[in-house]
Figure 1 (spheres, helix red, strand yellow):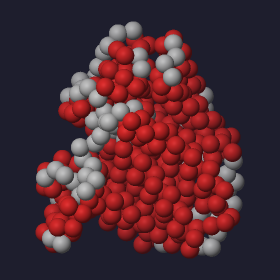
Figure 2: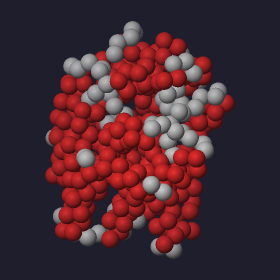
Figure 3: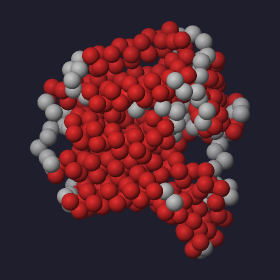
Length: 393
């Protein structure tokens, strides 16, 4: 892709991500709603400029996105998680005009400890409309996919980008338009993982400009503020990166960049501090780890159940693993392989510990969460498989 097109895409993405985060910021400090409306209008203007400028470039992405948006606007919000958690938070923000109204912990079933970046952005759609409507705010969840997709398209090339869009549809499915956040957090995770790989490990003579670093930082903030899982995912990226720069004996060279990027944890940590100060907790978290973990760790059947629900009973997980192995067999990029595999295994370990320590029934937890969490694993393997083929071509 021509350098000016890549630069154009990155500037568009930077504008979109800043405007998304700005909706969260405006509602955090209780500024006049008119500013929130202006912010969203600017978001739509930037999108319009992207669609019309260099029209022939990114055309598959533009076409796919418009199809997702049409389906989203033409379908009701029927998903229980979406209606009772994310859309409910969006509605509260709309009527209270403030993010921190959750301090009263009203309707605790809606998980008031969940970060509110996407509901805040979604509420701005309702504010612009002037009244509450379930469909228009739901489209904000689809719009959240666009910045990382535009960004990644610049580095995949036209053919491989079409393949990746097909991979995205296959693994994420209806979450592209039904308001789910698991697909969103998965996409932002692989985007952050890709950015860290480019910054710390890729040996190509492709210069990384200042905008790339800023985008990496902002994507990391978004990742943590989409879902609680985002905090664990960003932790996985930092631990993996730190481990490999230590192995490569380049830790001191990259220390400054690691420290600066680690500031991206701060917004989520502030949110968790707010939740702690207001006694807003998560019923999935068990602080008495050894009461649950040790007995379950000693039971082989629990491991069988865990891998059955996550992998053996999920054909998409099997397809992702097989495709990943085939792609790296065709072109074995040792650095990329070990990086993507380490991300996969470290997050798998964290998910295993979380499930083994759950205060809820173990099988019930697996039944209700495995089909959602697996999207992160499959999209991770799918993306790096496609990107590896790009390096091969």
